[in-house]
Length: 187
Image 1 (cartoon, rainbow, N blue to C red):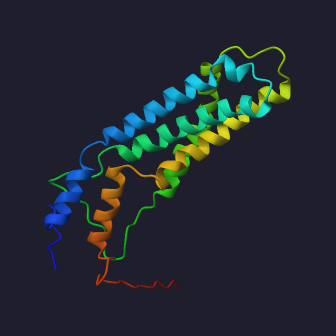
Image 2 (cartoon, rainbow, N blue to C red):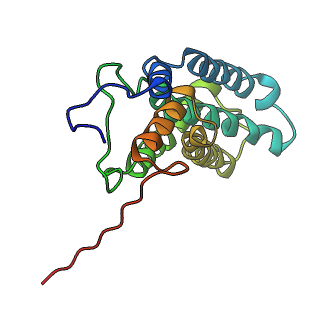
Image 3 (cartoon, one colour):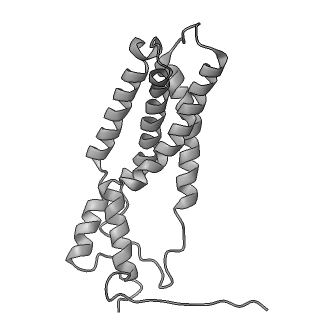
């Protein structure tokens, strides 16, 4: 057992994980920025805007929304999640906060701002487009932005992966780890 004041990394594996999680994942962030640049270049090109194919015209806002959402969602995950002189230890009953509300809030932010980024990237739309197609561009960018913000949880940066592995070690949920079961009653 460790003392409650034992806030440093315990063992070599925890030190390695904390070292990985204590610095931003610059390669991941750079990849997200490159995806944004590529999507904006593709979506704003005249090839896409003036195409006779509706599918090709709709791929622009979808790719821009997806890339923008991944950048918004992945940027937070790629930031440092550990400090070498303070490793967070969850209580015995498990982690007391949930990441789902923050992930959904970031996804909503990405979904709300993706149509704006698409509008800036595409610029003036051809007059031949119908109102329904213009509206579909906004909806496609927003939905793709929402989904793109959740994509980094499936392909996480090294900082997030290391922080999650460190949390599992601290909880003891690995092979041979401790298990805690509790109950509550109201009267």
